[in-house]
Image 1 (spheres, rainbow, N blue to C red):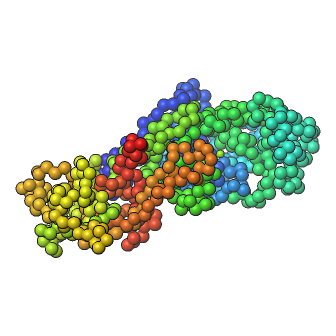
Image 2: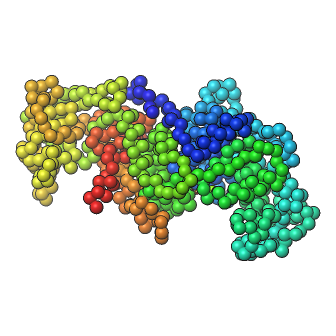
Image 3: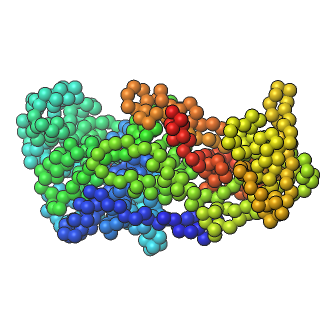
Length: 608
Ligand code: ATP
Ligand code: MG
């Protein structure tokens, strides 16, 4: 819950949502009470092959949340074992996104390492005491007391150790070099057949593996495979690949390696090296767990070993979540980039104006279960509205203006009227807005032939201008083509707050801005990126792209918005929540619509 904002422009102090309870936290709580580990240690292990999305936000909040709640630490670790798909751009964006989402909130629970340092080598024999790597937090105090530059952990930091672990497996007769082609290997594994190279001697395997490492063989000609069970019911145990040849430069290790460990081999060992206790991942890894355990147990590593737990990934309605599909949208220029405000990426969501607190609340509220399902996007939208309602500064802006001339209001007169900044937060105070004879109102707030129950402006009808007078429409001016160009109205000059007729009951209140004082702004009206709840259910997901997901208009804003700040959130009254976009420059305001005040999609759905 947000604390009251002491100054109108100060950021709201981040406060953790109440700790939720779920099956994973129950397990951790039991381990804590039986002192199973010296310290709870989780990790968030993104592969830097794309930007983080809202599904990752769920995983970040779970892993860091557990560290916070149980006095532990959560390492940020780049799971960087596939150099051809990875890039430093992604490494940097991941750090920025994690920092934005949980930085201020994680206190010193965020596990980072000293720049350029690898956690102490853990003996391959693994008989050492329980290992606790040094972890540097992000708390203000810790940063002050050391000049160390902090960075994430990298699986690639452990390539030397992981290589040694592979050698150890070979020596134990539990891994072999296989010369079959990738297609043959797939075929044999599918059929549960043994590779003809399975019974190579330890010496031959050691020799070939060394030569693989030394770059003697081209890509794809040989792999190192674990020797487990050729026809195991679980396909992941059918002599899985653990190392492959890839003559490719790595963004962290450069040209040092031409063989790289597979995810399954690198992941459990990285967890072990970092002293991870609870390795939490999504359900599709459940079938990999026997392999995770097999590797650690076969190497006879010191106990306690890390253990893997699985939960249901987040799938969100009206969007796609896989990095591969998001990359397609970027590469085919269907969005402006990974941080396009319509993208479900953390950077897109941030640019759109959603706060980290709203995203954390969402991640906490959806809960952690064992069952995959699609979360209704309205759950996310509710969390965003709830957060912005508390913090947004109210402003008047007209998106589709039509001019109104108040014929009985003195020409040249300017009144400064009082407006409230945020009725949800009295401390946020008020401001002055200028009122004059010529104003803009929203085109939609006038109807020449109004439907029944239209409580806004119509010919001969009255409406109240927010913070100002009651006006009456006397005349509609049109151009030669019949388009309305201007409305002539009269104002009840006693109807302002404090005036004799201020209490007069009028059904509608509309917003406005003074024409002479209005500042122009480019406004980007964003909507859902897809028109259906499950765009990737079948066929090409791109055919469900919403052609109206972005509309750019020029709006008229009250003059105080000239000083709009990117740290602030705004509600344009009666319309929606907005935030300043990165493209804004001095003299050129650009606002993103974060979200409308009400759910227009639900209304449409009701109408059928
Ligand atoms: P994608 O499927 O989008 O390509 P990924 O699983 O390949 O994602 P990683 O970078 O490997 O992405 O994910 C890092 C961590 O985030 C993993 O632990 C993974 O289980 C978790 N994660 C990924 N997607 C989701 C999701 N939709 N919901 C919850 N957690 C997720
Ligand atoms: Mg992955």
